[in-house]
Length: 199
Image 1 (cartoon, rainbow, N blue to C red):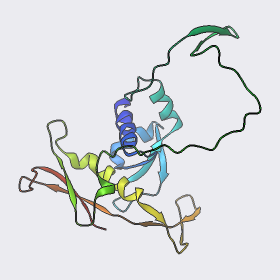
Image 2: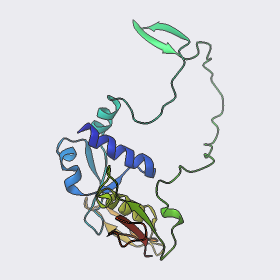
Image 3: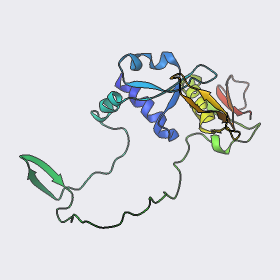
Image 4: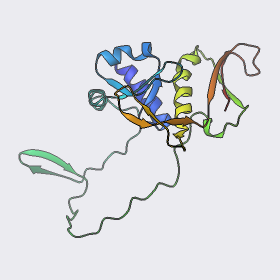
C-alpha cells in the first residue's frame, strides 16, 4: 500500500499539483484505508479527482522519502523541557518589530515531465512501452486528464455550477484538451501511447 501512495505522491510531485485524476480501481484500496480523499468532480472519462488525506500524509511522513531533501548540519544539541532538540545554529537571535516582507516569487517553474504546455493543436508526443512499463496507457490516463484540468479557467461570463457537496462554484472552462491513444508498431515511434492536443 505504501508503494501505491509513493507512486501517487510521485505523480503529483512531477506534475506540480496537489490533486490528481486517477481510475477508481487504481486507488480503491487507498480510499478504503482513508489514505486519500475526493478533491473534486470526476472528469468526462470518469476518473476520480483525489488528493492525499491527512492520514495518508502521516503515513508518507513516517517512511523514508523518495525525494531529495537538504540534510541539516547539526551544530549543537540543547535540552528543552527534558527533550533533546538539535539546533542548526545556536546563535540565532529572536527579534521583535521587524516588518514582514512580501512573498518573493521563485524565478522559474518546475520542469515538466511531459511537454503538455508546449503542445500545439494537432501536435502529439509518444510514450514508449518498455519492459518496466509495458502498458503506459494505464499510467498516462490520469496524467493526461490532470493536464487537461490544469489548463481550465473560470468561465469569463461568470457561469456557475453545483458540485457534489451542493455548493455553488465557478464554472470551469477547458482551454486545452489532450487525448490519449494506444498505438502499435505502425506508429513512427513504435508500440506505446500517443498523446494529442485536440483543442
